[in-house]
Image 1 (cartoon, protein in one colour):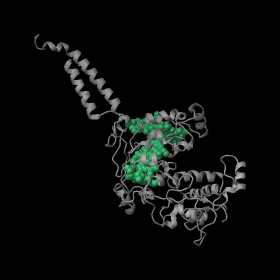
Image 2: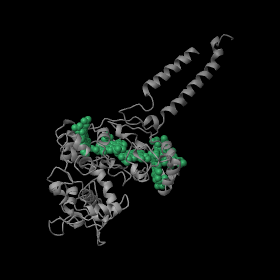
Image 3: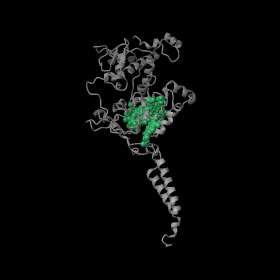
Length: 232
Length: 216
């Protein structure tokens, strides 16, 4: 009898010693105990794959492919698709020239500005800060990092199209410090951020009359006066 | 004849019974304790190719998850960012740090960084991120406090029981859509029984439990 108890105790110690407890950290991949159909011969996104020479299962779209994703609708109600690279809505430039669009080609509404605010908080706040003063956490924490103050007169004077191109393709047409965010922010959201940025800038430039109209406006709304970019 | 079986064999039935019970009990306990995702999955913390820290980036710098995991609200899959996303900052910050050498190399040569996937449901399960985060379910319920982890650790079991526990009581976990990416939200002024149920109704949450929802 004693032998059985001793044997059991040794067995339990052995099992616990070998297998450990629930929830302990491990570098080894999870056990798949009954691996019946756990892993099927199909590709998951981002998984390595030896079939293609570059080893990626989610292949980038081939050169010249035409993505037919959802179109953006501009102020005149026309549909613009992402493949129309030179269209003002996508390029931020007046068609056929290198001049920047003065005004956003997309309709601006309260919802658009709110959307822009949300997207600004995701992609821009780390460096430019919530107030747009260039004092985001990254700028404050990291040595040698400087982000533009978005209330700088030079930036306030930029055309909407130039702001759009800066956030999509990088500052100074891709030559500056800031890289482009085109792959992270889609076209409609880029223009929404531009619209929110205008509201943010106006918050420091508001005149007395506009402040009065602010007072009258309902809390949480952006008064129309602040949505119009200033003529310089 | 009477000496063929030695005397101790009289205790054999008892020994077999006790031994069998103990062994059987031990095996059952062992199986229930070990043969579950609570043991198999939780705690997985692989060595990553770059010592990327969510505690620094998402915690201290306060970055939104969607800066890097920008597919999470649009698709079933929550992508891990490409090296170019890191280079948005690390083109300037820690420009020549040896810890970031693989990131720079990946960026220049357009080769993928071999991040090790930690959370992975079996292939016979259909899971979808966008349906959860757009219905007020926060990352923290399924991934734990990522903002406090230097290295990501498999914190929750993601077993079928875990999924169903929430699907049966969605109002207890649901939160306002603005707070989904705020892992520190405490739920002040948001009672599950009142606001939770109201929000679940507004977002049309059914808390589906039929098998074909997850095994399609």
